[in-house]
Length: 359
Ligand SMILES: Cc1ncc(COP(=O)(O)O)c(C=O)c1O
Image (cartoon, rainbow, N blue to C red; front, side, top):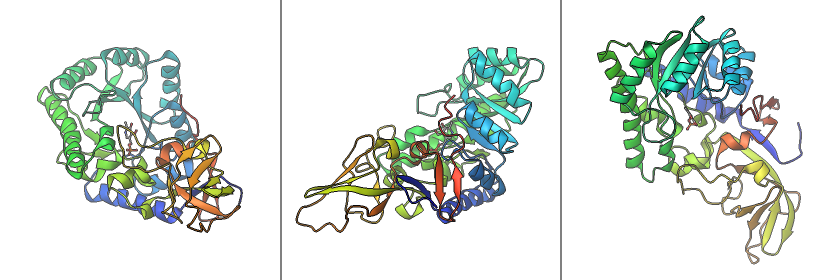
């Protein structure tokens, strides 16, 4: 096993426990489990998710989809509008190899896909905006209108409605987080109900974001969950109160490279930990990661290859040059994307197969 640092460490036991919790929740609530693989970008982990009962995976990019199909994943939901000609051509090739589901949230996007799939046809899910204000039509009336439009186009099978309540990451209280979970589920279920009133059947109603998954998933009428981060968790999730440091499966191992009276310098900078401090207004994290062995220490600043940890000159900091520490990242998904491979607690090395696959 490589000893050099910085390295991305994966605690397989913790990951299995997180996966088991998600899979059991899905089974107990009769939900399809369609995890988002942008978190781990790994064939190995995707196969473990399938073995645990996932019906397929969710991806953000066609690069991720290609890697997952190469890994033998039979069904892939592309939770992103595919509109460029180059991407539509790639999607068509992928649809010959696996069951594909594609996101739609505009009439223009629907027209482009319809033209391309007029012969073969493809499954599409309509995206509704549950408050994040990113992609997605407004739930209810607007969703039903777009559903009507899509259902009359050749080549498109409308089989689902979905949303992503990423604004839950900005929740500043438990009440606010729970209110967002309710709004997330309602936006999907209400929109599906409107479509069904108009005679358009919507079998799949999908929600998915880690801070709300266990709350929105139990809402009556939801059939499908797409959590990503919950396989690993991180300090943002700890800050939101949905995980504890011991639930976090990935850490960055770093070495003390320099020590001065008032600071340590470690070999993990922004190219190992990322500068993330949480999305959508989250202000719960302190510094650039949590030092597992020394929670009293704070990573105050990062440059590309340096992390700086202030120390009290009178406190006799026990860390010396060449000592190592494990850091729980603020945002596991972006940290993983900075490494080629995981050093797994089992002694294996697993590739971050879709690393950098942003197309
Ligand atoms: C469309 C969609 N679904 C699901 C997810 C998973 O969210 P999380 O990582 O919070 O579980 C994301 C994350 O960006 C997303 O964009």
